[in-house]
Amino acid sequence: MSLVALSFLPIVIPFALFLGGWYLGREKTQCVAHKASRLSFVLLIIFLSTFPISYFFTDAWQSSTLIRHTALNQIMLGLVTVMGWVLISFSRNYMAGQANLNRYYRWLMFTLASVAITVTTNHLVIFWFGWLGISLSLNNLLTFYADRPRAILAAHKKFMLARVAELSLFSAFALLYQQYDSLYINTIINTAVAQSNAGFALQWQEQVAACLIALAALIKCAQLPFHGWLIQVVESPTTVSALLHAGVINLGGYLLLLFTPVVAQSSVAVWLLLIIAGLSTLASALIMTTRISVKVRLAWSTCAQMGLMLLEFALGLYELVLLHLLAHSFYKAYSFLNSGNAVNDAIRLRLSSAAKNNTQFSDSNKAVVPNAQTWLIALGLSTACVVIIRTLFGFEGAFSAWWLFALALTVLIVQWRTCEHSRSVVYTFIMGTLLCVVYATLKYAMHFVLPNYSMHTVEAFSPADIWAMVLFSLLFILSALLHYQVRWPAIRHLSIALFAGLYLDEWLTRLVLKFWPVTLPARAKEQHHAVNANQPSPKP
Image (cartoon, rainbow, N blue to C red):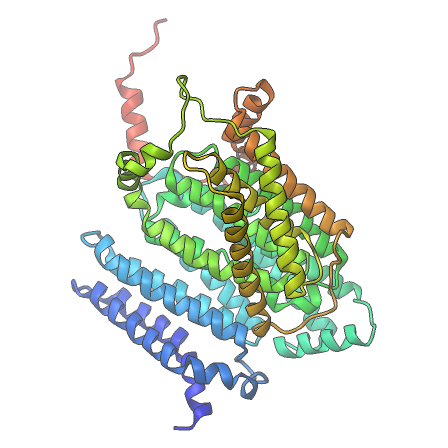
């Protein structure tokens, strides 16, 4: 078998997942989990054994009619394959004893197959149907426990918002077809790049299509105020939450990366992402600090992380978008699948001697507040580390991402400096520099995966860059105040508003239910009637 033929083998993965889901959905035996696990493992072996060949022979298949065979698509397909194997293997024990296991595995594999088709196709129509298939298959997983009212309400809102995103994407593809007279993604992208290099501006069809693609990405990534369903789908099985947060919701970032030559040239689309995704990042990150439930905190964290990923795209940091997408997928998959051990981890931390030694509380159980000198030293050290490494690696463009890294490093240094065994300035500077080197190395490595698009370059301290820096600075200041100065009246009122999620989801829920009411599950209705029946009748 030739090397080029071997590089074609990973394309069987989406079809094998689809056929496996169809077969397991009809299976009535108790071996459904075993067969699904075995199939996912075989597909993982196929991908891992052919990935090196497939990666180096991408040029031979880039112009394929239906298959987009690039480094980005290969990495995304690998992400789907690895996540599929992890989730199916975890489900084997986690879902053991549940009713309707055949239905669970059928829709799980249908969802994975739809994602795999979406990230490998080169045809707009197939891409749109794959996008639609992801939503419809996932909806069946979100309603797996059909007797949970919150799960049904979340799936109902998700269903309606998904239709809006799909309509936006369909309209965008129709406009792109009208402008480029082609349904093939590689033709559209290559033409857009050639026109940009020749100095041609976007036509109105392309401008509108870029905005619609940006809107579809914002909805897919559950940005405020389209976020409520993501917070409430924690009522579904943990594996479904992991699939959603680690794989499906990231597709908004992949959509933008795929159509970068079109979206990046539209200033309206870019500022749409800057404003909505930026404010969502700020609000979601702050709201997350008020949550106690592990799953709910992770859901708000996803909203913030997806907003940051879209913000990075708007700033022209495409390599960070891909790095963020991959890192977030593995982190959230582990976090959700490990969420059941949160109580044990908390008890172990509380009982450990290290926790006792490092916990600094006053007599009133109030955390020690770092003084201004500590904050200034930490900020100065982190900024110095960032500036030195950025200069040595020769990075150009927006400075806001480095500013965010400096602020995050500042928080870490403050924690080091305020613990019982405080770290020295030299140790702190060395560790901060090493962290910056790791960050810069990963950022630089992503350049070998993505094409070099130069039509949208955000200069350092440009209006877009300053907007992002202001948002990151606000997040840093408000987070510190919420953590250390929560007794201040203004901070207390802010904390209350954040605990309510800024009331955004309530307004959207009312609008959705007014437009299309949802029927509560039968068991919930029976419980509601039983409670009313046990209550004494009002006196005349």
